[in-house]
Length: 120
Image (cartoon, rainbow, N blue to C red; front, side, top):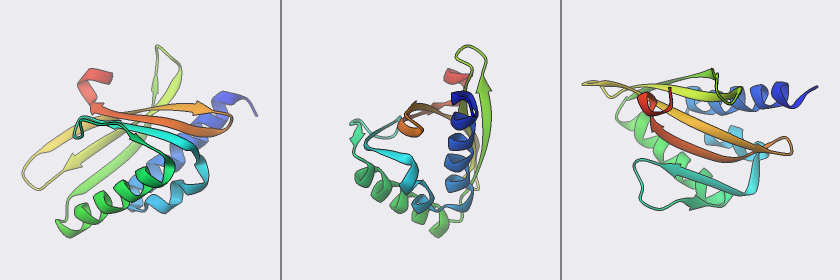
């Protein structure tokens, strides 16, 4: 299996975590020093456990307020790497966000969330 195929599988797993609102799905697929950057936080989260805790809380908030987030895997034509496209509906507005993933030895080592029009 080539790296591109592995990256696609990892991106599908990341999207599955979003679609099921279950951060635990990602636990075996992140590097210990995983880094997460988002437009919503000034600092970068460093460490798999810090990220998983953050996402568990975030997903609970989505469930509590009945917000919908639908994740799909897309392909970046410039890098030929998969990324996640999030269609987010908070009941008032629908927005799209993109999550750029970086990989290291068959694991996800970094994710960066931004507005989709910046990424696409």
